[in-house]
Image 1: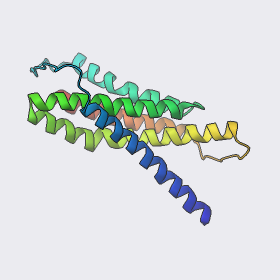
Image 2 (image 1 turned 45 degrees about the horizontal axis):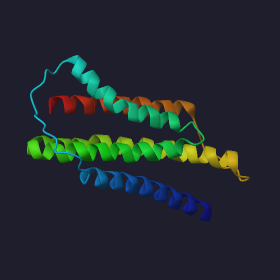
Image 3 (image 1 turned 90 degrees about the vertical axis):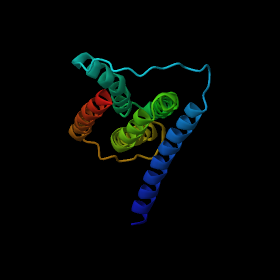
Image 4 (image 1 turned 120 degrees about the horizontal axis):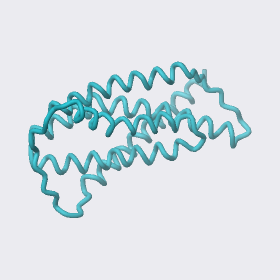
Length: 173
């Protein structure tokens, strides 16, 4: 029973760490100022190619994070992707708020409700699996991780479906 408490505590620590990295990247992105960016929000054509661009722009984060869960040092790359994604989102948000408050609110809501939960969920699973692989390779203690390839693939399929919904929402915004 004591072992479960330690596992649960470590899981909470990993989620807290990942959220702290996300928040740090967001803070750095908000205060990042190079040059004022002139942005005009225009009604672009809402075509399939625009949807595909939005989807692919976000999908690569998830695919690389998912893939890094299978690598021994993937947790390091996952941390960098976490920081980079939050940094870029903060720069976009700090630019959009100056142009359209409505678009700003809709971006924040879609980020919090759809993108962030699936991003942190996959990031947590991938980082946990990668750290476990790392410790199994470089430590004398063996960590038994209940890893099921089919479940890991199903997670990616679920995330793909959620990203399609997220991309449709961004297309409508």
